[in-house]
Image (cartoon, rainbow, N blue to C red; front, side):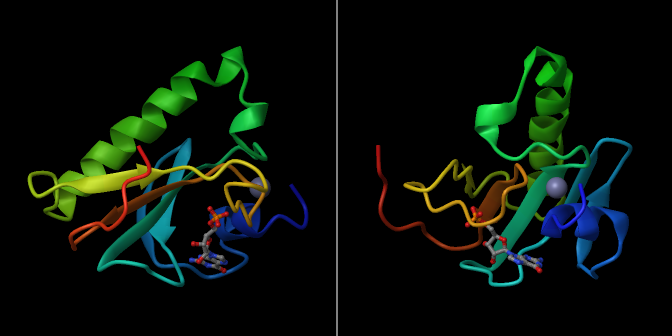
Length: 114
Ligand code: 5GP
Ligand code: ZN
């Protein structure tokens, strides 16, 4: 989608530190990491938020989570642990309207909300 920051990153129009790419999924380092490991995993297809996923995205979401697992393993944090976060909408603080999951690891996490 035009004017979407993460679509531009996926297309390489804006540089990013890529950690994984396939036909459907792109993953890159967050520009303002909150932990030693902070990766963003996004579908290449523009979906503005979790609110906008549909039945046709079922396999894509599976691919995203398999990618998260793969990256956690590659970065050596699978055993120590990690957190996966999706911010959906205003109250959650979503700032980029292209579906993305944060993979955060490398330090003991603070507050648990649940
Ligand atoms: P949100 O707050 O929407 O869940 O997460 C958006 C994330 O995108 C933030 O953690 C922010 O640091 C990251 N971000 C914003 N702009 C850029 C950018 O241009 N490049 C990269 N790599 N990350 C970005
Ligand atoms: Zn987009």
